[in-house]
Image (cartoon, rainbow, N blue to C red; front, side, top):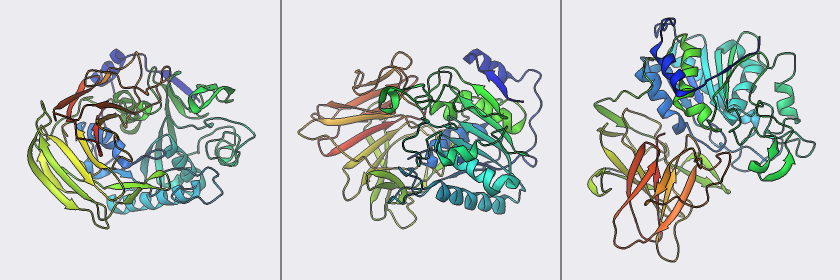
Length: 441
């Protein structure tokens, strides 16, 4: 049966966490390994807060994996080769290889797959076309299962609900695969890619022929998370509650991330090619990491320096859960990029980095805020740089995860950036440098 539930409020979320009368979680010996699958243009790094929440609730770290697609952007036409962009077949094959690797490493017969946005296309394609026997559960957050639009033009595009790719995935009385349990997580009306009007995809006033319910699937358990945006329905704590319940059979004990006293951080440095992001190593670049003051952003000590090799790794860095870090990327063809991060409460091997593609010109310092796991929403969120709301964030349905404000570059000083409950203090580096404050939430 096609189930539909609504996550009414944070209060209900807390009730679920309290777990009154809920089934006990199975032991790690009974739980499936999980592979988290990122969306269009993204990286595995978007999943580290979700992975931390699973770990904080007792899920064995050795069972939690995230894939990086080499070329994460979709082609304009799925059947036409496009440099540094991937087809649905290529992503399905990369995911199949990752599943085989995880099964080999864990010795488990079946795994669970959790996907955000385009990542769900790869998951559904894999499960329907040869992978069902390897998979126990599928969780799809904000996946455009019926397209971003559905029309007769651009039928070769992967996100066209009338095109061959989605038509074959959605064929049949049920839109899921027998023998695999499916959960979809979607917004009520706040997903920019599930709108009846094309305003938020650059086609205002033009019907998309897609409804707010576009991410739901016949035959799945379909859960609505009101007010959350396209990315949040995969990465928000409320989304975590639902995926954890669905995979383990019990409510999580913790929503907050439980810190570790000693942490190890690592990740890959990648860049851009042919106008889009890749997850390919940016060999030859340099990464330095500085511990900085939480209150001023001033450097306290250099704790890491490395020239990137063929594996793309910038670490490992052995650090502290209560320390704040500045990551400095120097790479040919890119501005010197300073990325300031919130403290890392737990270890992670997917703290991936990319340099900025542009910096301020003509004097002044370009300071940006970045929120990879969600968008900035006017009236819903607090987001400021140096006490000001940055320009370029659209009104209405949240659809921007990156915003920039130019400030004076002299004298060098603290620049306070805020997103809701998180505060990151950066520094105003001069023209030719790019400054990014990247939030966990």
